[in-house]
Amino acid sequence: MRVIPIKFFADNYCYAVFNKAKPVLSLVDPADFQAVSSFVESQLPNLTLSYVFSTHKHYDHSRDNLKIKELHPQVEIFGGENDSIPGVTTQVKDNQKLILSNGLEVRVLYTPCHTQGHVMFYFEGEPSVLFTGDTLFVGGCGKFFEGNAEDMHNSLEKVKQLRGDTQIYCGHEYTLSNLEWAAKVDTDNEYLMEKLKWVRQRRSKELETVPSTVEEEMKTNPFMRAEKLAPALGVDGPIEAIAKLRYMKNKAQTLIP
Image (cartoon, rainbow, N blue to C red; front, top):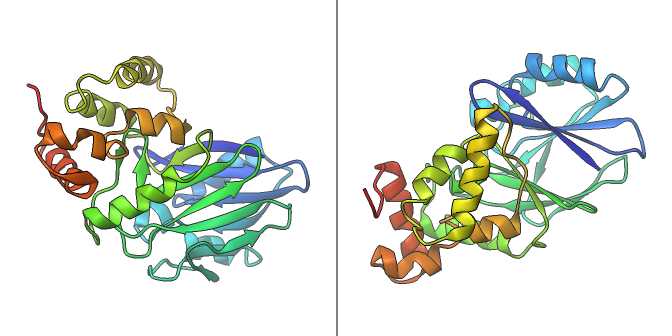
C-alpha cells in the first residue's frame, strides 16, 4: 500500500491511497478537488478514483464531495453516520470493516469531539495506516468544537490500542506550532526536543512532517501523554489533564515563559 500526501489550501492534506493489486484510487478528505485531481492526473494517471473517505463535515475536509459525486458518479463516499457530510453514499459506524475492490481492508474508528460524527479510517496491512482527520495531529489534537475532554480521551485511547508502528496521517500541517508549544509544557521530554529539531529542519525546506507513528505520538504528543503530565499541570488523571492542556493551548499558555 502506498500513501501520497497532497497539499491544498493553506495547510490541509488530502491523501491518495492505492496498491499494486488493481488501479484503484482512494482519496481521504479531498476538499479542494481541483487541486487534488490536477495532482492525480499528472502523477497517478493510471488510477481510477473509486473511493472517498471523509473524516468529518468541516468544509476544508468535505467541501467538494458533491462535485466529486457529479464528476465521478461511480465513486463511493464514506462518512460517519452522526455527521452532516455532503455527498456521502455510505454512512459508517464504529469498528465497521470495509473491504475495498483492491483488497485493502479499512476499519472505522468513531472519534467524536472535534465534531460529533468524526471518524478515523484505519487501513490494516503492511504498513498499517491511520487517517486521523482533525482528531489527532502530529504533536497535538483538534479543538473540542462538539465534544469535551472525556470524548477526546476516549478517542485517543483508541489510537493507543493500535500497533506502535502504525503510520499516522493527519488533516493539517500543524506540527511545528504544536511541538513548539509542547516543548514549553512537557519540558523534560528528550524525545520531544529531538523531534522538534527534526521538524524545524523539515519545515525550513517546506517539507511535510507526516507520517508520524503511534509510538512517536505516545512519546512526544502532550495529549497522548496527558496522564504523565497531570502532576505538572496540577490536576488528577488523564481527562482533567487533557482538558487543562486544551485550555492552555487555546489560550497560548505554557508552563514556562
